[in-house]
Image (cartoon, rainbow, N blue to C red; front, side):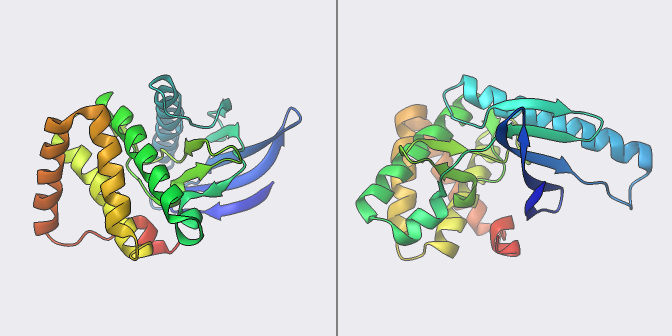
Length: 216
């Protein structure tokens, strides 16, 4: 297996499975935890993420196909989605097309939130664009279930910070496009509630998103 990315909770590898190119997400152990508790936590998070990936797909959000979940090794073996990260396209691509992708992303986030799914790590690195411009969401490792304005506001607030930190030249346009797509799915009333919550979150102090902290 070839290591693609090393994370705080899991490592990502490129490998093969039954003749297919796949991504293997392996949750790593923590020495500071009691061994049995560590195993239970890794097992739960592995199963939980696989479930979120599947349920996101059922509500209309493209995610990698899961081929196998190995609970003994704490691994998820999933489809390798070939393409470029939205992060890279926003930096180098055509602005009008970039805004269309942001609008599409907003609709996908709306579908998740409308069905009680919080991604938990909404960054432009976790959105893959394929050759035919299909958009995939990956890495639900910090995801969970919730329908509150607070959790949905935090989800979108993180994305706003990523835009401002990495795509500052077009951050406002990008986030507005996301909100427009989001509103098309959840409705203007809910969108307004989320916007008010984001404003409230911003008054609490600056939260530094994982993408900014680790420069991934």
